[in-house]
Length: 289
Figure: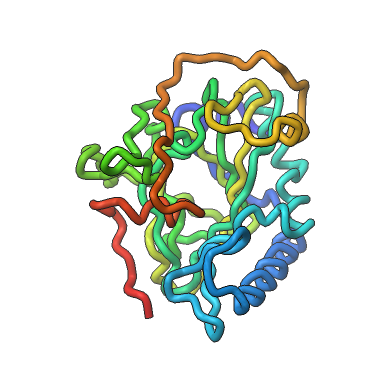
């Protein structure tokens, strides 16, 4: 499915955007399910195992910034996390494919929260970096509604410190790291497109200041021989998550730079909570209304 030129671009830049992977009925099905999640959030007063709420959330105006693991809560998301076209793309990259988990990041019109610069690798380093996140655009991701921003080629650079005062916070302090975000590229993707970004890619996103919402289902995948270096949870579940190729008990070890996410963040629950401790945020926030 991927041309040699596209494969080379991913390896060089650390990201690609592929259009028209999901068809219109598939996108509409996800939208309807997502609307149901948001409507049901009216009865939720605080973050829980499903919902991560905006600070300005209320029963009258439900404001959700993330649905945690939607594939566990609705079959439509479970199906799309193993979409055959996505699996074929990943097989082109690695040959084998293991599903990890997913989250639906939601930037509602006019207030969707930012996500500070970070590398996914800081959260879950593996024995090698054949690991990435696929983003399924449920809405058009345009220049104004808080698209994902990436720093091209940063996946080949250092693993930045994601700690504050010795504790993991899931974000890079741009001042302490000397991080220059001026070369950021926005992943502009019409609904039905997918984005791929390397696990070591530096990325983030700003507030959605537009009148258009932006919902992006992010799914983690890895090659079968990439094994996590942090807690693995249920071993049987891990083995059962293999989607394509043969499993192995011999992880591929590569000399990749690693920083472990310990001690754990002071605020748990999601990246939004983890990043509360960051002292020098890069992206401005909107005041709660």
